[in-house]
Each structure stands twice: as C-alpha cells, then as structure tokens.
Image (tube, rainbow, N blue to C red):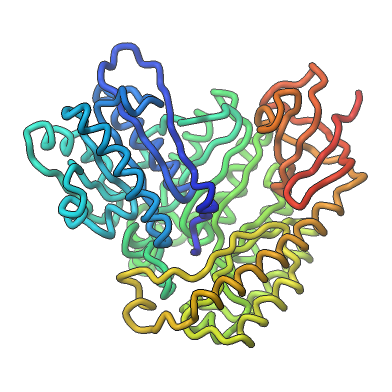
Length: 480
C-alpha cells in the first residue's frame, strides 16, 4: 500500500527493546509489526511509558505489560498478530497480573470488538491515542476494560522525544506526517490512521538535532505520504485553503523541508519514505539533486502498470503519468535507485492488465520491490464495492512472475556497481559474520565488506565493489 513500506510477511519485523532506567520498577514488552511508521510509533509509546515508571524489556515473561503494535494492511499480517496473542495469553495463565494490550492499525480497525474476540486482552489503543495509555493502564488496574481508538485532527506527537528502540545508534526514523487523504480503494490506512496532517518543521529539526547530538548519522523522514507534507500552522491538510493568506504564504512543503534538513545538518544523511506518484513534485527532485547528503533513492509505489486497474484502485495517476515521473527522475537524478510496491491480482485484473504491470517493470527496471498478492480488507471501498474475483492460484502465479522479473532487474542493477567505489555508512556487523561490516550506499543497496580494524559503526567509508547478489553488494574498503 501507499505510504507504508511493508516488511516481507515471512520476515515480519519484531522490535523488542531494553532501556536502562533504574528508577523505573515496571516492565513493558513491545512488539512492532508492519511498517516503519509502526516502529516509530512504538518508540513514541516507549517514551510516554518511560515517564510513567516503565522500562522496556526483551523478556516477555518478565513483563508487567505486553503491547503489540499491529498492522492491518493484509490478512496475513493480522493472522500473525493473533498467533502472537495466543503466546501472550499462555504467559498470562502463568502470571495473572500480566496485562496485554493491542495498539496500532489493527486496534483501530477492530476497536472494542477485539476485547470480545480475545478474552484475555485488557486494552486497545489506536494510533492517535497513545498519550492516553497511562490512563488506560490505570483503568485496567481497576479491573476495567480500556479502549481508546479516537482519531485526531491535530495529533503528531511532535513534542515527544522517541526512545530509540532496538537501535544501531547510526540510523533513526523521524515522522513528519500522519494519516492519509488518498483513499485508495484497497487500503485501510485512511480509516485506521485518519486524515493527513503535518508536523511543525521546527520540531522536526529539533528532533534531528537531538539525534545528531547522540552521534546518529542518518535519518529517514517518515509519513504515509511524505510528498503531501505541508505545514501552515497546524491542522488537516485539506483545510489549507481556509488558512489565512499569511499562513499560506509562509507554508513549508516537502521540498522545502528536505532542503532545510540537508542544509542544517550537512554531515548527516537523509532518506524519506513513502512517496506517492501523483503528489511528488519536481521541486523535490531538484532538492535531492542539490544536496549530496540526500540519498539518491526513491520508494515510489505504483501498485499496477495498468491504467484501468489504477482507476479501479483510485490511484489518481495513470500509467503514462507515472512513466513521465520516472523519466523526470532519470533526467534530474541520474543514477537514482527506485523501488516499488506492486499488488498482483487486484479486483477484476485481467491477463492483459497483468502484462501491463510486467511491461512497466521492464521499462523502469526497479532496483528493489515489495510485491504482494491482493488481500481483501474489510471496510475498504474495494471490499464494499468490488468482487475479489481473481482466483488464488492465478494471483499466486502472477505474483511469482512479478517476483522473478524483479529479481532479474535487481541483479542487473546491482551488477552495475561492480568495479565502482561507493560511499557506505557502516551500520554494524554483517548478519552472517562479525568479521564483516554491513551498511548501505546512497542508492539503499546493502553493502557487505571485511573489517580492517580501522572502522567503526557510524563511519562513512569508500568501498570498492567486487561482486554482488541480487540483494547485496560485496567489496573491500578502499585502502588509504
């Protein structure tokens, strides 16, 4: 879906965290599933609870409170959460004092019904209600069921300094917008995260300054749709036309915010996610071209290469308009890496429409991709008004064709780096061996290389690329 870069469901992200605040006596165990926004929200929750006497722990059996931050983008994501709840409930049978809560998009979608379905669940809290968590916990302590899933027109958590969870100390997320106005027919986000509103740029700069002071080296600006960022004093984006002339004149858009971040912190690297094709302006591309420290990588979900499918999805752009944007990116940002989200087997998708998607992929030759079979989500316009009529086996076959083509293109893109020297920000040890470092280049490609004994996490190093797979570049540090 747009605005949320979803982790592969077979490898769904699990964020467990530890904070050493000795004066706190209670422990909370937090798991985060789905997108980067959920991980950032968990950091906000940890910060709120830290002020109320909770340390985070990576041992769920030692926890006083378990919170799972949920994703509703696909049915499989919700099934994963329900299986985890079974695990928590088995622990609660041993420790009856344990409290269990669900937060995030799944909480917003199912609301109080969740408490009825999961008999041992104690609280449900939506993405805009995290400030109410201390109160909800008190309600639970008094033996009451606690639910707050109210959506907000103002909430951005701009004044809360997130606790960096499961952090590598090098890279961090900073949210700049919340909610989405695009109303794609397949997507639950507008219903679970509410309408679009942007965060005060001064608070964004302050949070990045705090990260710089802690020696973080890279920031990813997050939003369901970062290109829609528009600060004009607060409130919903749709109310911009009602704002005063002075507020409109002094408004800050995403291109200006990017320029502000890159100029203020020239020694830090910046990324952003996620972009929406109809909202990405050429000014954003020019801001990227202007600053070396804005990474040359854009995640640009397309969902389908067929204009007729895009219309049924209410995507607000056509195949031709998307290709025109790709051409502008190639012109203004030579060497910029591109990734996509693609849905296989959306309602009514014909074989010809599927072939349109494959041909678009051949035209763009994306560096990376996030590919899924269509999953009908209750409450969405597609669920209400369209038949999920593409057979499962057809969806599976089309998805496999998309994946195979993307693997071919990923390898093609990776091979172009062989023989080049690339700047890599070291993030930590390679997963396979602590004798190797891992880090990413500007184009978001993972680079693995042997340690020489002179580098450390957070260093920018020049790496000569010698080989690759479809997912990883392999090389050696350039000798000084």
